[in-house]
Length: 564
Image (cartoon, rainbow, N blue to C red; front, side, top):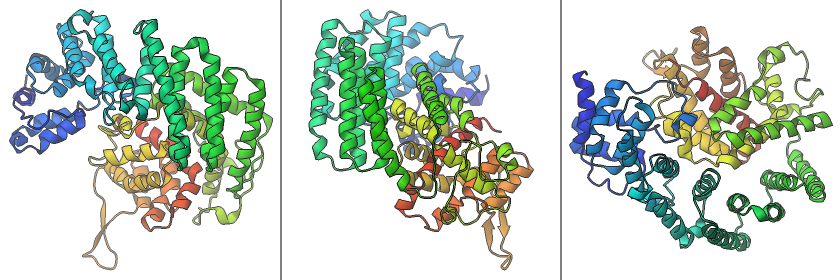
């Protein structure tokens, strides 16, 4: 083993962990020890820890990098893991070893470290910043069963105690998706985790929490907050569907009722559409034809309100397309029942939405690509700089035409995962086309996009795209000002894309779309954001473009994760 590699691992034992006792987020732990002057000598070891960020218990469900830690690191890590002082770091290293080090002969010992250290953090499980703990808790539970550790650590007993304490505490009134996702997994994966009496007690408590949240509805004035409160209520009902199967029909009816109540209260037509869609889905589950018919009428009325705000397009969706949309929705829902990964789902269904440039470039007129009928546009609503080939016009029509499919996919993803900003770290950190320092910005971009904060989404996308393109080229491309040679400036976005195209650094279709989205040949988003041409109303008005961009950029960063 090389001396440098040995020192990187061995120096982990020398790191000073002062003031790190209450940290439960691995990223915060690294930042804290990195700021400590006593640790400046161990910079290489701290840099090494950044590479472990993505090693979460479920990392192989959504980790797109193919490389693995070399054995010359894994073996010495295995040798020192018992001597690591900080429990959070020891937990992370043990998790990494169990996932990666196939040759380890002490897997029982590693599993014990994971269970033992997870127990230390159980009391933080339902803290607002404890998003990383949920998967770790379930992973430790798996190991507890697999290695028969309950007698030694009483892990199940302690986890039940923490959950019961939470349900009986004031904190439970602010229940969020951390608990919902955790409990959903407990019930579906571990059928015998609770006795029938224990489950009945929890069911009763969950109904109490729902009552508190429903009684609070009249005190909520903001549509977005109303939607979030409703989604939490429906999430709890979703747990009850699994836990109280005898009352499944009654519970689905309650889901319908709460969604119709919220749809009647809120003003935002887009949020109302989500509530009505949720109500319809539940009505279909119990085959209540009368309610299905009623909800469909409400959806049609709401759609009129939505389309009236967008006079630039007139769409009459024929029955065949409605059937295709229903099939697509069923396909997405079915896929998500067996795949618990947002990134996999995006990759699976993006081909259905991908712009077919070969086809639209051949098309001479506007446009029979998607619906089999012409869609009329008001000229004043198009962005000013349309290229002479007419490609931009066709591209814009393709996006708006495919929006029903985009909306179905994005809505399903939001309902299934309701991801935090940190969920996207596994895509942005260690991504080969994202320059250091931009991982957080791009994670925030994806978080804003899926939660329909379109202003933040466009801003984060605009401030990061040029840095990404310069990073792909591999240098800061600077040119001298033509009038004053002493002044230097960066190459334009258009020139960066030209150079990327010339050097064949990205797929041609990626270059075309980046040009149509961000440069003056298309929407010119970066320029318009930079020159303050968009108000918040205008950001929100471009929701169709934003939703498509969110999916496209997700695929762009997934597919180029390992780009050299």
